[in-house]
Structures are given as structure tokens and as C-alpha cells.
Image (cartoon, rainbow, N blue to C red; front, side):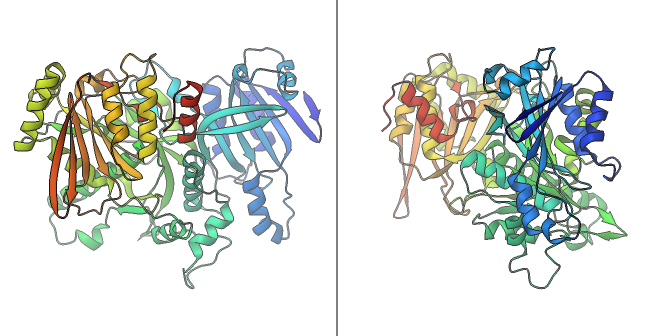
Length: 582
């Protein structure tokens, strides 16, 4: 069925079998795409497995990303590709008749009941046709699976379908066209689009990203068609776009590990990989996308970067048995079984597993969702962050463990906690000393005003049983903080086993994210049940003040529970509730 609305035409497909998907692929896909690298088929498989029963194709659709590529490259070649794209809309709607589509096209339907799953732009090129795509977070709603998906870098998008405006939450995806963009450009585009949509950073189109990567590159290579980017080129692009990226890479064996015996070589390699995984996880928990990649051999040569993609979330198994012996303070990443990536060659929401978890994830998500790579293959991470953030994530774990380990200052802190809230202090100490329990830490980078506003919502939100007490909220409200802070949540392994969307905190450590990496005292405060220690450094002298939190209790991490709300939306919510904003 086709319907015309103004200058646009909408074609409707009902999805009930594999043949229906094949028809869409025949109409909008490309037979010139490489075998096994068919993002459109993977997109259709993803939405169908999550209930898609209707697809509507919109034409003509002028997509800003493709128009940018068209203006700067496609319009300069002999073959006429045209400006107009198709846009496929995916629905899970109970209606058995196509008529419901007309109601929403005319703006007469309730968008909340539409069952909108996302969209995918189809470019008018002969191959690599999948353009800007956003699919809903359908996996996060799954129950009955051990390895649950958490897409931490998701953001809100507004989609106009006819005369109906729809709000969609997801992560942007794009297939590289092998002309203006290759995999590294697509990873940069995905990361920067998330930073724009989620955190309000400037928006950047494909040509601008490509040009920024080439600036100050010298005579090495040409801009179009792109010959690929090195790690240095990607860092250069981010710097030229006014980011201050941080990066970490596993060194090549030939550079650093020659001359060592095999056992030591493997040990050093595992240590590098563990540092890289911790580095990635802390930024990922902050909602910040991570550009990562693997090295691949080609014609007996080790390339600088074989393939690049964007990490946007992870899978986590809360029932995983964790054994660390004498290690009693561990990171929540130990329960992670895989990273969720946007792979321009394969499709959105691919899962790259730990090698020993591959079979478990294959059984739960299917082979089309599991990457051929493993987490152990990752060799680099690039994080697009603002220049004012200087204290690195890899130092958080070390400082948190030091601050919570035994010592005179820590003993004094626990003594104070027992005087105020003995029952909760006891639970935390049991996690520290019992053989089958652990203290678990989890870090997140954020703006301090967002932290304070989220705490205020949590404090005033009486619908949540485990809300933050007013004493603690007021302490943080009045505390001086820099613009950016690291918040290191303190919880227990028992809480991890009960995980259902968010954790209850027993406390947190606030770090100064603007501190220099070698700072002798980078944290601002330590909170455990019933007590907060605030640290001051002035004229080379360190002092501390202790404040009792009389009504303290374990509570939902506000900045995590409300992590799908931007700062301005937090303010709007408070105003709606009649809460005064200071």
C-alpha cells in the first residue's frame, strides 16, 4: 500500500515471514555488498526478533549526513547518485490493518501507542547503502537471560513520521561508504553524534570529520576516496574539533616485548589488556562512547589499526561467581561478559565477548549478533572528552582501593560510622572481610551540577523506597565542587547479585576530575554509612572535616537511576514538582 503526504510517498510492508524481509532487502539493499557484511539484513533481523511486524518506507527523504557527503564528494563524480534517500521506519503494532499508519501520518494517533522501533536511512549509492540509523533499546527490555544488555551511551532522538513527532531512545549507527568514510570515520561520527545528542556538544558532519583528521597530516595520503586513518589521525580529528581526547593502546609485541620469555610476554600482554578494559569501562559507565579497534594481519604485515568501531554498552551477568582470593575491593566490570559495539561493517548493537563467554552469549543472542572479535583482541581506546577533565579514569580504582583499605584514617572513619549507623557499617565491613563477600566500586564522570540536581530528584522522589536522605543531599548541595567530578560508587557483591537496573549505594568517593594525574590527594570526600569525610588542601597542608549523616541508609545511585535525563531535563522535572532551584 502507498500513501502520499504532500511531496512524500509512504510504502507499507507487513512482516510475517523471512520472505517479507527478503523483499525489503531486494528493494533497498545492494547485491554489491561484500558477503557476510550486510548491515541492512542485520538491522531487519534485529527489529524482527524484537517484534517488528510493519515497515514503512518514506521517499524522498533528504538526510543531512548524506547531503554533506553528496555536496563534498558524490556530486563531483560522473555517475549521478542524486540527493534523495529512502527512510525505513520500523513498528511493533498490534493492528492487523495498514490503516493505523494513515492515522499517524495525519498526526491523529498517540505516539506512545505507536510501537515505534526506530529508523534507517537508505542512501542512493550502489553499495554500502545504510546511512544514519537509530534503533530503540530493545535488548534492555529482555527478561529471562543471564547476560543482560546495558547500552550506557544511548541518547534521546526526535523523529518526525508524517505529522506525528516521536521520541526514540537509542544509539546512532552509520555504514561507511568507503569513499568519504571508512570504519574509523564511522566510529568517530558515531561517538561525536552521541556526544552531541547526549551531552550537548557541537554537531559534526562526515566531511568535517574527514577534513579534521587530514588537517596537519602532511603529504601522507589523500582525502577522497579515503585510504583510512591511523590512531594518530583519529586523535588529530578530535583535537581539531575542540575535544581533548585521552587514549590507551596495547603495545605491539615487536616494540616492547621482544627478548622476554613466552610466559613473561603473555603476562605483560594480559596486564596491558586488563588496564585497557578498565580504562574503557569507566568511561563507558559515564555514558561516554569509546572508539576502539583491533589489529589484523594483511599480507604478512601488521597494520596500525585493522578495524575500528564504537563501544556503546556492555552485557553483564550478575550471577557470575567472582573469586579474587585476598583482593577484597573489586570493580563492577568483573561481572561484564561482553561489550556492545556499533560496527559499520556488520551492523548496530553487535556484541564483542570475552572469549570464555562466547558460547553463553551465542546461545542468548544468536550468531548474527556476536562479533568475530573478542575483548582480548582489543588494542586501543580513544575517548572524546572536554579539555577541563585531566584526572584519568585508570587512577580512580587505585585511589579508591587505597582510601577504603585498612589504615589509621580508614579505621577512624569506620569508628565514626559505627557510632552513627552501626547496622550499615557492619554490612560494609562484612563485605571487606568475609571470604565470600566483596566491596564493589563503580566510577562515573559527570558535571557536579548534574550530580547535585540528580541527588535532589532522588531525595524528593518519594515513589522510590531507597531514596537519598535529606541530610546527605544537603551536604552535597552545599559542598564546593569543580565543574567535572568522578563519582566512585561503593556497594557490595550481595547488591550485585540483586541487580535489577540499578544498584544501592553504601557510599561514594568524590574525585576532582580537574586534578592533575600526579595529584597527592585527588579526592574531595569519602562517604560511608553515617559519616562523610571532606578533605581540604591549602598551602601544601591537608586537613579533614567529618560530618554525621544521621538518617543515612543505602540508596539508589541518583545519577545512574536518572542517567537517561539531561541536566536541563532534570531542572524541568524539579520545576514541574514545584521544587525551588537555587
